[in-house]
Length: 297
Ligand SMILES: Nc1ncnc2c1ncn2[C@@H]1O[C@H](COP(=O)(O)OP(=O)(O)O)[C@@H](O)[C@H]1O
Ligand SMILES: [Mg+2]
Image (cartoon, rainbow, N blue to C red; front, side):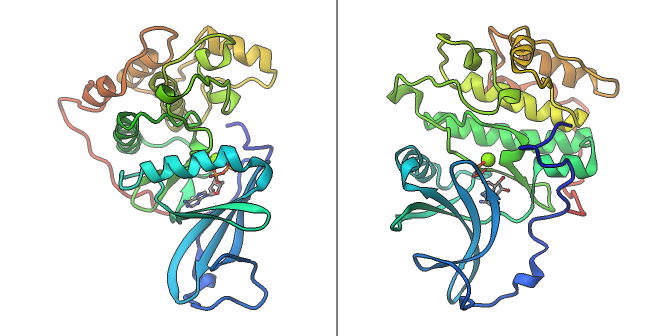
């Protein structure tokens, strides 16, 4: 598989073998404070934000704080309000609060125990088909509920999906999400490898849901093959591959999964989430069984 933000493939195990975090209910003196939250460790440093694992005094729950410098405040206020609209939808990161400090906007979410799907695939290789179905069904069901609210994620990829020991997944990172019905904005955004043809074609409009279906197709392909469907370092060549929907299907993926992916990786008449959820691959006559446990996370 490729690499994530130039980090070597294997980042190691869970972000949360956190017994060392114990159940200390008070802030250590050296901890950085954000409002009433105190920092435990940095989970990720992005180009425009940092994500921090945090706690509150006298509260044993874990939280994530997305710390966004004021210059990016406006864009990320959108993320906070979308997260609030998504409250209660299963398999979506749960919003807790947002507030300002002198220099930053802070978005607080519940912490999801587990690791991201990218690292999981790097560590374990291909996801067995029955587990991939179990995961994909959760993702499609959650995204169908999100789309019903008129919201599009626009950055679906393995790095933005957390998987836990019971193979339950949570979709995180709503920084590029938007309401297509409320704005003319149709940015070309997200990660190039997971972008759909309409997103990377200037002047080409999109409604929204079809962009997320493409992203989910990329996630499914990556689970089944441990490779990205469109993987080319030279960006113009990558975009040509995407526009021409050039995908190689390696040995070992079932025909029905390939059929589904071929209905996703098309420019026109892409299959909808409802069709995927009611379709053959997720509803085989013989049924299917997922172990429901990914172990070793
Ligand atoms: N709710 C959460 N639970 C657990 N880990 C999280 C959560 N939110 C973010 N993270 C971790 O922080 C990383 C960065 O967060 P993300 O929202 O994706 O920000 P960015 O915009 O920098 O990609 C994620 O890849 C994940 O490892
Ligand atoms: Mg992210």
